[in-house]
Each structure stands twice: as C-alpha cells, then as structure tokens.
Amino acid sequence: MPTPKKHRWICEELEEFLLTLHPAYDIRVEKIRYGDFLYFPIRDEDGNSWLDPYDPEISGIKIDYMKNDRPLNIRVEDGELGSADAPGVKKLVEEYMEMFPKPTWTDHLRELRAMQNGLRSAICKCVEADYVLHNEMFDFPSFSIGVNGLLPYQKMRLCDFISYLGENEIDVRVEFNLEHVEEDRIYATQECLALTEAAIAEEEQSEEDDWRDKYGL
Image (cartoon, rainbow, N blue to C red; front, side):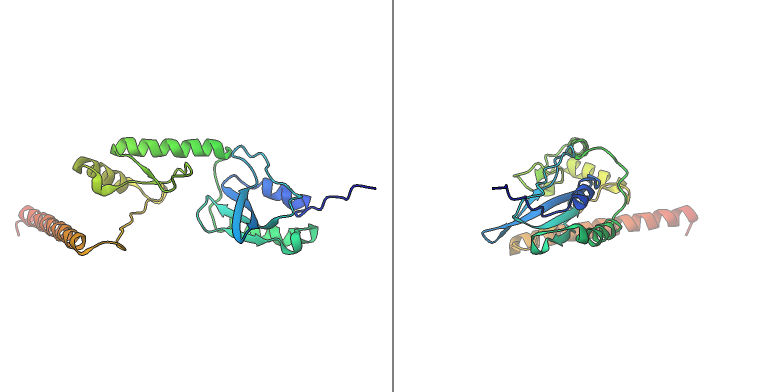
C-alpha cells in the first residue's frame, strides 16, 4: 500500500519568501493548544530554517519588525497557504514592511544581539548602574534602571546621557509608576515637584538677572 503523500500547510514559494526576509523581522508560526496561543520562530539567530512545512497544527503566522509589538498576523485558512494565496500574502507582508525603515545592517540576528547586549553593558558602565531585565526568563537586550535607588552622581550621569540622545539614537522612555502609590509617597513626590519647580524658577530668574546686568537694564 503506497505511503500517503504529506500535506504542505505552506507552499514552497511562500516558505522561501518568508525565510529570506531580513533578520529584523521576527517571524513565528502560531499553534493553538488547549485554548492557548503558542508561537515558534521559523529560523534561528543564524538564519537557519526551523520551519516544518508539513506541521498540521499551524493556525497562523506572526511577523513582527524588531519585536516592537506591532505585528502582522496572517491566518492559515483551512489548514493551508497554497500557491493561490502567495500573491495576497506577499502583498500584505510588503505593505507591512513599508511601515518601517529599511534595515541597513545585513548580519544575522546573533551578531546584532551581541551588539545590543554590548550597548546595554556600555550604558550601565557609563551610568555606573545595574540594569533590570524586563523579562527575567529571556535575555532580551531591552532593560530598565531603577532611578530612585541611584546615587546623585549616577542620576546626573543618566540625565547627561539622555540629554545627548536624538532621533537617530535608541528609543528611551521613562515610566512613572503611579497605579499602586499610597498617599505618603504621593505627598513626598509632590514635595520633590515643588523643589524642582523652585529650582527652575530660581535658575530662570538668575538668567534674567544676568541678562539685565549684561545690557545694563
């Protein structure tokens, strides 16, 4: 009795297309198990394929540029993305890629990840502060620094570094955690705001006085 032919859930054209996308695009296949959505990368950090084109459990594909949480989700309808689906899928992916700048680097993800981790270490060394990973389970390069526990000179170093950042550098965001703050900490923080505003007013007045002295006003 002849062995039944395996059924491809993705045609060769789309498989090759996805695997040749720039490493900046994180591509994962979706499986649903016991009501949970699970995602598995289709290639390793060196660009080698992990994709199983015959896996019957695949329910979708997620493409995420630099893991920025703005993914493109592609559904696998009726268990297959065949040749007839290829033009439409390619168009969706190409339109998604137009939303982001064209990557200028060509290395594999492993080399890029090493550069990202090196930059993280360099920033922490400059500020002389320890970093806290956003996700303790995975060594993601993005991190946070607990500002409250820094010494005054460390805070100054951090502020100096941030002041040099522009549109071409890394994206830095400061989070103010207010959801579970009690009254005593609110009052204490308001005092810090008052001190900051007073210092700003004093600095502005000093600059105005210097200007008046300079021009004899």
